View 1 (cartoon, rainbow, N blue to C red):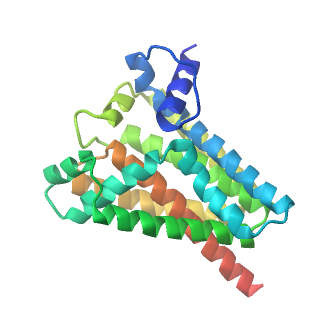
View 2 (view 1 turned 90 degrees about the vertical axis):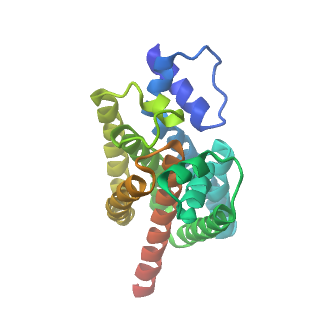
Length: 260
């Protein structure tokens, strides 16, 4: 029964998908990250379904791209984008660590957050449109799996890395962490990577290469700027990892297409 409770809490926290209502226990919250990737699996399945439908109906490629861009936002309520915008504001302030942590909690939106969001949406949307235009069904499946992998990786980092604050949502989510939680998320990530490689080896190579670079950047940047990770930086990680991986894949597809 605990497994179903953890799953329900995960979907309640990280999506707008309706879940059964019950009184949450501290343990439920502490293990909510275990099924965080499954939210991505639902998003990925819908992205694949939307892309496949537009292919079957012979609709313009940009319809698939825009739909793929909107699905995560609609399904999560912009949860990760909010963290991305808060992090962009904090990083752009060039203030002290303490001030940056205050900016993360500030509900007001700064100009750097707006600029960052617009830029990110244009990049991500363009990359998705190009993937829909230049890729095939296997590439589309790999794109769907990306939403699963990004959340599995984000969950592992959230559990393993030091926290910037002694309170907050991420602290509650990782308070009951243990080796089993990390192993469970790692297994899910391994399955996702293998699935990506089976569907599209080029996509898998791009994703793994970018992950290695971005994880190192993320660890160093969060430690230097905030003293650790927060729920907002986790949203920043998911947003940047998904969008920039798609940008890299679209560039690879364009180059390979040009060579052919």
